[in-house]
Image (tube, rainbow, N blue to C red; front, side, top):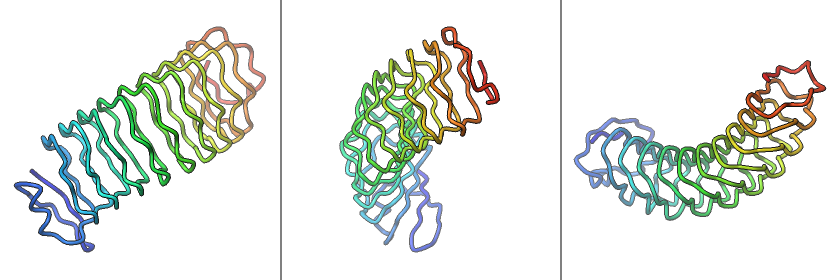
Length: 231
């Protein structure tokens, strides 16, 4: 199997016969083992900050090192993640078979968990900036923290959205069952709300540059026709 490792400011591509060979190296902080046929990720050294293990056959993630800052594990068969390390900033886990996520660390800034089988999300950390939870089975979203800038929740079963954060710049909620939208954020730039049950839109902020709202119920005449709007 092929691995890429970073250690002591050096970059190497090395063929390992097993994960045990990693122990030969000191101060490893990045491991990339993508495009293999891995079914398990063993316990890794506590020096590791970045793991890229996408496009394998992993069914669960356990024993992630406490030093970890970023995990990219999309396109596996993951059903279970037991626990996230406390210092994680980015979780990238789309295209798996997750039905539940464990508690999210307070340090988290980015969560991408689309195309899973999630029916709910855990409480969101207060400093999260990006949330992509599209193509799941969500019927509601948790409270959205004020730092959130980008939200993609399309292709779920949502009938309403929570209060939108004041910093939100992009909202994509296509292909749900929304009958109305909450008050839009004063910083919102892009809005995608195609294929819902909307009969009207809330007042648009001056920051809006692009809107798509195809295939809704009759949209009442908009006051702000100087925007770029796709009806």
